Image 1 (tube, rainbow, N blue to C red):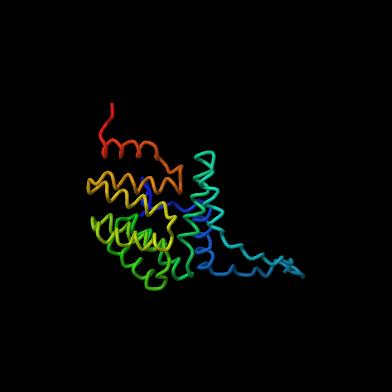
Image 2 (cartoon, one colour):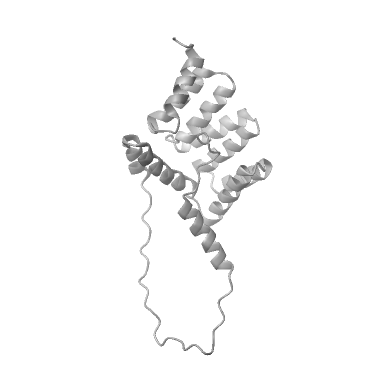
Length: 212
């Protein structure tokens, strides 16, 4: 499951804009040629694009643990979310995006079907298990949410979002010590989670009482 307060990590604005723009361009008809406008004799030569280097998650997690500011940590966190979310084939990515839209719109049954379809195609995609865990959490189905979180963590033990989600489930069940343990496990991976210190103090107070 994902961290609070968002339901899911927001796509970087530029990436969202490029995706929307690419879709619009793909659906647009080619412009009609104008006969009164001479065509250029030689097309401009375009240099071939270099293939993108795969994201090194190990490096990103090292940088995340040592980030010196919240802003730097959030930028690295966004890269990790993107790498997790869009690690599958184009078909899987399309289903993931649709599932996230349905989840944000609270069309939870539709989102559940989307993530079921993702997992049928890509059962080793940790973030798909995490996303479906989030849907189950929003539906109030803690048992299935915990099961999917465990599957996500089995595939990606560093999934701070899944650990944060587990903390939320335990908190809802009023098992505050377990909620604190899960949240501190997330902080060991991502020390600058948003609102980390306030939440940790609140869980400690609920688990062990207010020392003051």
